[in-house]
Every structure is written in C-alpha cells, then in structure tokens.
Image (cartoon, rainbow over all chains, first blue to last red; front, side, top):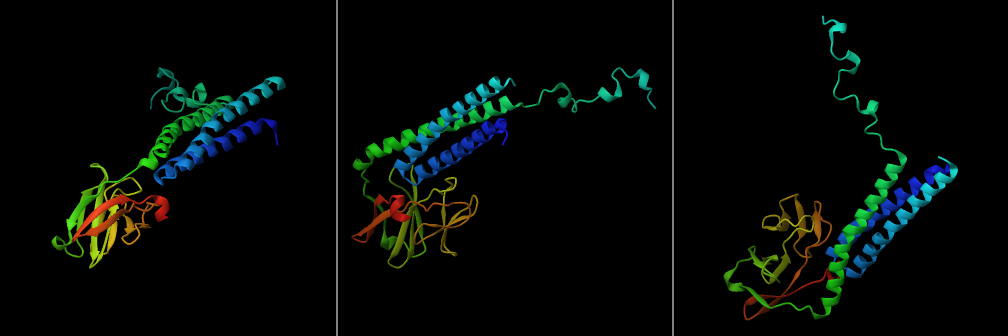
Length: 67
Length: 177
C-alpha cells in the first residue's frame, strides 16, 4: 500500500468508530445503561486526539518526503 | 443568428454554473479532507460529553431514586378496553394506562422510543400505536412489534388496592429487556 493512503484510511476508520460510539452513547443513555454511556463517551473523546496525531504524523511524513 | 463577434462575453465562457472546476474553487485537497475528518471526530467527541455528564449524574443519584404513589383510577369507573392518560412520575412525563381485559391492566410511559411521539391504545388491534411512523408496541410487554422503534416502552409498576389502581414506580430497561 502506498504510504500516502495510510493516514486517510486510518482517519476514516477513526471517524467511523467515532460515529458508532456516538450512536451507541445516545442509545445506551435511553436504555438507562449509564456505565456504558460513560465508557462510550470516553472512547469518543479519546478518538479525537488519536485522529489529531494521525494527521500530524501524516503531515510530518509528507514533509520529510518533500511532497 | 447572433454574430459571435458581437457578444460581450465569448460563448464558451458565457455560463453561470460550469465555472466551478475552472476557478478550482470547489476542489478539496488531501490535507483539507483529512482536516475535515479530524474536525468531525472532534465534533462527535464534544457531542458525547453532555450525555456522559447526564449519565454520571444519574449514576450518582440512582441509589436515592424513589417514585411517588399515584392513584390512576377506580376499577369500577372503567371498562375493559379503556385507556387513561396520566402523568407519571413527573408532571411532564406522559403515561398511558390500559385496562386490557378483566383483571388485566398495564401502564407505560407513552413517548414512542423512536422520536418520542405520543403512543395511543388501538382498541381493535389490541396494540399500542405511535401514529407518527406507525410504530407498534406489544401491550403485554411493551416491546416494539413494528415500525422504527427498537426499544420497549418503559413500563410503570402498578398496584391494586381497595378497588383502585395506583402507579408505584417505573421499571428500568434492564428489567424489561
């Protein structure tokens, strides 16, 4: 796989996970399963800095490659 | 026919809609696309925080949760097949009591679990019906039978005393699933 696709695919996966976690957070809240709500909303919050790091790494890699 | 030389704008450039690619104004490059994805992830993260806060609040207060006892109706005043709307546990929580048949009655919070439309008792079909998107619920269990809702209606715990029915609590979802 070309290295230039790695960041995009990783970010797409992270975004997909964010969407799924957000959906389940709301569902679990209405199902009154509050512990799961806390875990899922925590997971969504953790995914954001992860996405940020993937973006920064991708930009750094491309700069090093001179693109 | 109009003379090409007399046109103030040459024919090939005379359009209002097909210049988007030419001026490159709509192109989304790789970096912008990735930034948009990170921004969306941030938006999702921020949007879950209020739910987390509400859940934490519920977890901290759940041990002290108690429900009032509220009279719904005298059984002698209603006939099998009747339904009564009432508010329980709070004054803004709409609920529906259904006298299904002799010695059998049920009560549910009557906000549809899809988009919270009010749910009605369909006497002929013996089902609870949400008219917004034709969601249907089983009267015996509160579970969804048709339409978009996926979660059961929260059931209200009933108690019969001296010929009258009282609401005494709301079942948690785990007890119903």
